[in-house]
Length: 299
Image (cartoon, rainbow, N blue to C red; front, top):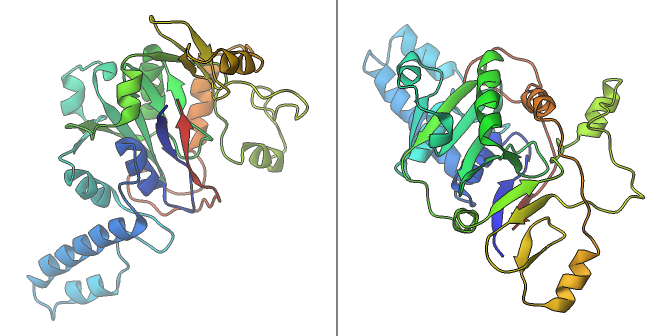
């Protein structure tokens, strides 16, 4: 079966991860985004030059570093906006009074991108369900409709910049599959490096403590469908009843775990991106550095 695309954090390339997780594929590379940033820099330079290339303002502008990118992998909201425009997508500020006056139920949108300090991440609907595709997580996190509204409200209270994605997103196989089946998450994904970070801070949350390595692996998702008999895979999804031997093998790995309390999840989710120092806004520099790889979550 196909997969939910989830690009994990690498260096400070959260803008790239945010875009690719939104579009569900490796659509943008650092080189692509750098090219857009350089183009924006040149457009800004030309506008400044209109006031006179001998002016103090122009000379000062030339001495300043780019506001659209830096060597760490940071990219501005302008770069993200231009990258999405290539696909006919538009960003609308969710926090704006104009949008709020429309009183649109968030579950009727297609996707959001969120920013706090230096970190960008995507929340996207696939099929009829919402997923937090934060690159700081070890995998996609299922979000209920009720949780989505609460999550966004809490993000706003914490000072996040939230943008609504408008336009037709590229087709993806995960969207097609989740359009005919629903999944249920039994174990929430962890924050990359969570245990190490918590230990260094002098505490380990009871709810997020590393599991006993002697315990069997637990499934991540289960899925339901109204068609033929199915069986859960190690990855947590179900497959059609076609191979009895496979069914028996897979059945051995089945386990049930209680879903974490959603209210606790909200508090944890808000903390995922609240790392590093800086001021609030949408143009930032990143101080987070993680080593990881791009992976797919099989469904």
